[in-house]
Image 1 (tube, each protein chain N blue to C red):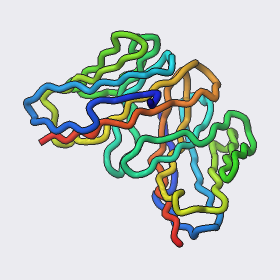
Image 2 (tube, rainbow over the protein chains, first blue to last red):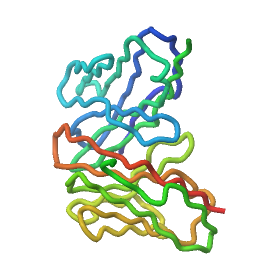
Image 3 (cartoon, rainbow over the protein chains, first blue to last red):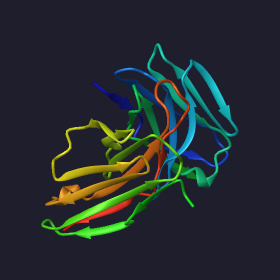
Length: 109
Length: 115
């Protein structure tokens, strides 16, 4: 079966660092993706991992451990505009993207 | 112009109506998807079309009927829906198979309310 878990909600302060965790169990693995979704808008792509390790992209980094079925998204120097839902998704085989429930992040001043 | 466009953006329909959602992608991708997003639930994959052939149908009720006439267009035909079908319906497209950094691109979504 397919199962992707994330915390439901997180709160952090402007300027701080926050780590959003994701664990997955899927039938096949062809990459893990993180997306940002602001309320009422479509998800937009943030990062991609297929090999173990850390991928850095500006203020955002994403880590993957395939043996543990685990990933995290790290957001540094938080800004108010980072308040959004963050979706973890696994491309299991072929072209199927399976999404987690999303983590709603609130950034407070 | 966005890569994936959906119409209409908002739709209100009665339970006996028949309507359709339309999606068009301008990215040259070979796969298209319909997802359903309800409040406080994960994105649910409904249908996947690869090279115009349906390759995934996640036990979606028959009152939802997809159509993919070509690789750029995708429809979701709706009939005799229930109030619990009210949700945001997202169309998406992607390119390639297997391990790939080719991400999935979403349209802006169609907000559906069934009354």
